[in-house]
Amino acid sequence: MSVLRERVTWVWLALVVLTCVTTWGLSKDLVSPTFAVVGTFLIAAVKVRYVILDFMELRNAPIPVRAAFEAWPFVVAAIILGFWFATGPLG
Image 1 (cartoon, rainbow, N blue to C red):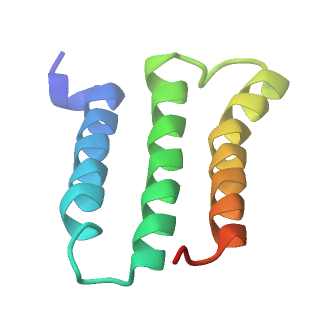
Image 2: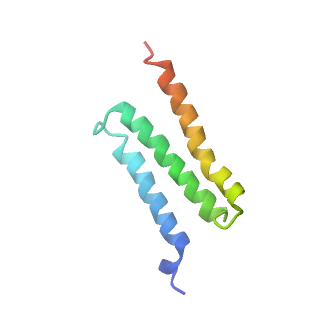
Image 3: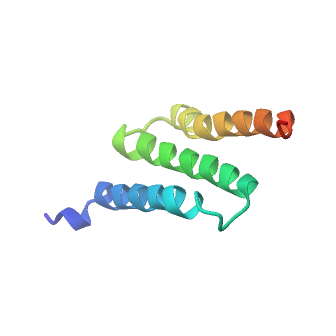
């Protein structure tokens, strides 16, 4: 079987592309700092979701377990971003 037919190969490639987007795309002065921070956290949450579903093999887990694990990265990102927005500018 070809490696390119495996789902995990495409997920790995997507993780690499998303890493490049956050490393080079959002770190330059192309976007505002707020957009870069929010984008980085959202992309990180998507990447964690991919790792949970495909590398930790929870894609076929029972619905309550899968829902809890899929919601976790987005809830954590929302809490961190909520605190970040609540603090306001420093200085």
